[in-house]
Image 1: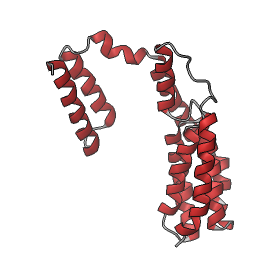
Image 2 (image 1 turned 60 degrees about the vertical axis):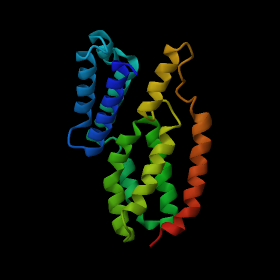
Image 3 (image 1 turned 90 degrees about the vertical axis):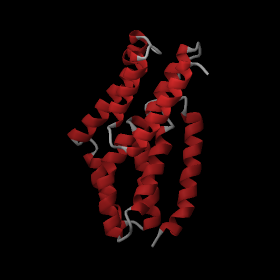
Image 4 (image 1 turned 180 degrees about the horizontal axis):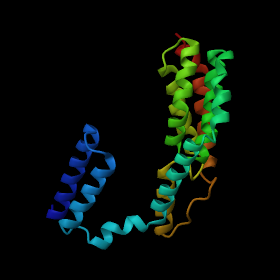
Length: 202
């Protein structure tokens, strides 16, 4: 094992520990690791900074800016308003409606941002049903993941993999190319939670 390989393995372990401890912000940890790789000579400065000019990195940054703008401007306030009235439905039906709305939203903005937007609404809904918030937040989590895998913009990972595909000589992914697999998986997940919903009830 060479010095470079050993150093990279050590840095991976250090990064995992720091991520798990959460005492240092994730972005700062990533920058520290990149800086260490450049200072140690494992990466040149050009190689270390090349990611900032990568189209995928720029796209992800723009997507987060867009998601934050949607959150701050209240563009989804109407959706949240109607979702907040979901208490008139049974808990069983509410789970399916919540998942459907959030899955669609998560397919077109970053799914993490979608979760952040809808958490306060679902906390209120859980209070109306007089149930534990986790029984609303768990379907929220799954729904955001189901929607995120259906389009290229749904998650940051999709964009990165699409860019890598182009770099290695393959065609980048189309906007809805992942839907051929993502939509069937989402349907299976919806059906499973539909039948599992009664067991979630208090």
